[in-house]
Length: 262
Image (tube, rainbow, N blue to C red; front, side, top):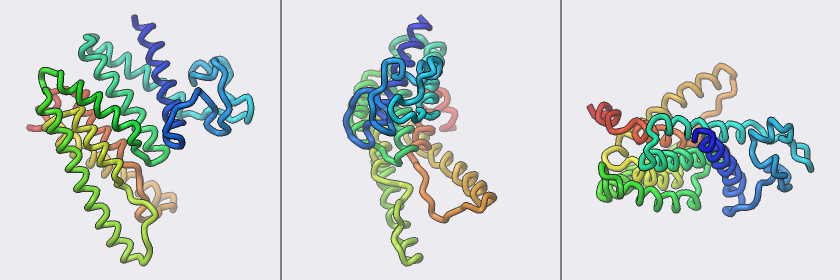
């Protein structure tokens, strides 16, 4: 069973890599291909882990290596599946948790690489999470929908505040900012995460996400200052930190949520 689960998770990780390569640029799917030249990959090259051990990780056309991201994603998918199965093998718990984790992973990869939260990912995921949350006895449709609305509204207000701050900064600098850290994609993500963790879990998830982003920003600024490469107002992808907050609440379970609520 563990072997079968590992193989399925490996396939899921390979699928996430294909989606992360295709969706940001094309908003549609194609077969496994080189992300640099677009050439199709042979079957041994579909999986980063398989191609690594088969010494087929270079593109046959442009000779580019796959890089580390595909390998990390597949290892993370397998590790996530095995951890969730050991944690609770009940299909009613394991399958929804695995779907949540894999979709979170896809969103994080795309946002880190492209600073995008894709509607083509969020919309179907929202429908899935609405159904999964509504059928959970501990939550039900009301808390699920309330969580989604609260997540969207809170992040929308933060989005508006970010626009005001960006305009103020641009006025002081005398030039517009090329990019802001907090975009409308993060607002959509807030609604999605609200459907995942429900009400009142979304409140804790957002607070944890903001704290995680703040801690990372302080560390990042410190490193850049030491390297003398710091640029003021440099945006960072915010989605992964919101995902971290939601993951703590969702995978930590009700006990962790109650402890955080005091």
